[in-house]
Amino acid sequence: MGDGGFASRERKGRIPELSAIAASVRREILEMLGASGSGHPGGSLSTVEILVSLYFYKMRHNPGDPAWKSRDRFLLSKGHAAPALYAVLSRCGYFPGAELSSLRKLGSRLQGHPDPKKLPGVEIPGGPEGIGLSEGIGMALASRIDGLDNRIYVLMGDGEQDEGEVWEAAMAGAKFKLDNIVAIVDMNGIQQEGKTSEIMPSGSLLEKWRAFNWDVEEIDGHDFDSVIRALDRPPKHGIPRAIIAKTIKGKGVDFMEGNPEYHGKVPSKELLDQAIRQVSGR
Image (cartoon, rainbow, N blue to C red; front, side):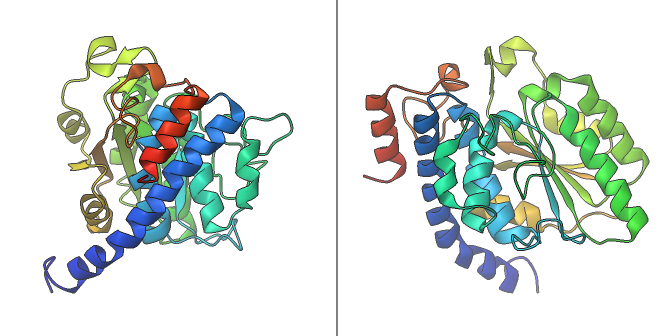
């Protein structure tokens, strides 16, 4: 049956559930950032639909056995978006939700950037810009050698595309014909110091990734139907995949959306309360 048949109806039937989870995840992101007094709201909020689609729809994983050899792997290369990953992992059951309020606290397992030695479900210590795709390439090669049919998903920022290591890894993915890896770019248009188009103009990421011999598509990163349709698309034999997800920095909070100020700044308590009401639909 074609995409307009059963598979399409199944996807659409899951969207209300995924949307409800996304709203809760956004609230939890803001609450934990408020408790910590520091962190990165903008780039965490822009990733929510991507993470929710991966963990609650697409990926094969087991919170009861985080080291399960046949699991799909998610690598958060843009490690500053850790609050979004923590909120999703806790809702999946990797650790208690009560622990979210310990974000960035001394002795907490929830560090400013994820630490795989401290927290179950975390695959890499994301943070050094550009490193995630290289690690993903290594995991994809290892899975092939081990005869596993799992998939590796790597989420990067668009500011991260400034890094040369990203493109070295992209060349390797094409050379080794790694059709078991999916690179996802959270293209929210803003990096730490301002707009990506002004700091280091990248032109068309769609065309760049195609030039590196990846199978690429551009989607609306906040539309669940678009996200899960892209994740469901079968891989082309011997060709790695890249998804350019167009998103909005600070999605869901009007004064944060598209505002570089909230890349790494937690708002005042009054504004934070306002933000929580917005993402909660109140």
